Image (cartoon, rainbow, N blue to C red; front, top):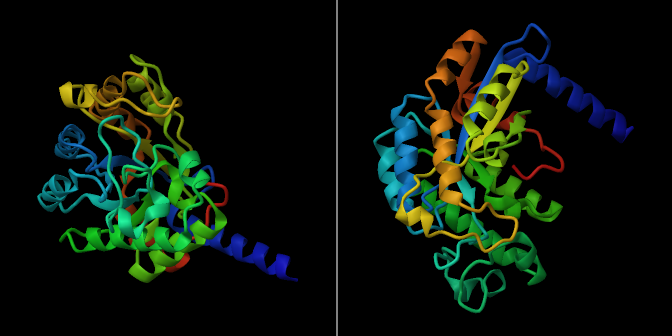
Length: 297
């Protein structure tokens, strides 16, 4: 009986979404561009400002635990049309450029290494058996810092997926989203892509444009990591073996893919409508969010 009820809820939820963002072959095709990691450093903020100035409707996820979040806030105050999310952060992955908890290392000893910084990877964090009480305090502090910054906050998402690593943590983040009346990325039936991140250097723009030409009707989420190839970002080296080499070149090309003059042509040709998380929340409603199982985007 319970299983039947759950299936009915999922069925009617899908019908509800279809009334706004139909999923059949005659439905509209929507594209949501989410630029992650704003606030991480100055060069990334400067790249984000270039994307914003292009006029693309975008959402950007800000790392409020990082040193440059205040500059990100200043940029976003000048551009209130941008939909802003909190990029919930429990990792710090760059050699010689680290950050730690907003609440301080003394209040979150299970979340930090011997120097008081977040661990560079999810695996190292969870090897240290982080206490959920400390995680809750830290995530709450990041959300409240964001809300108190003076910009409108629309949604939550998760740097490297650490904040939703376990079912217990996912439930915690869901409760925080409900408490602070925020959306959650991945909870609006989005079809996820980060194709530009994985594409080789020299191929990112072509990969993005090819992907856009083949979008299917519904809500399509494209996650992008932009940056400027300059001395600041050239100095950043990922401490994780799975991280990209020549990261600044990759981020520069991801930015250029969004600024390609071919992109608006394809959007018009394929009748793809650009939307933001603010749009999704206004149209669908926070009360109609649905958990995306086995997803950390």
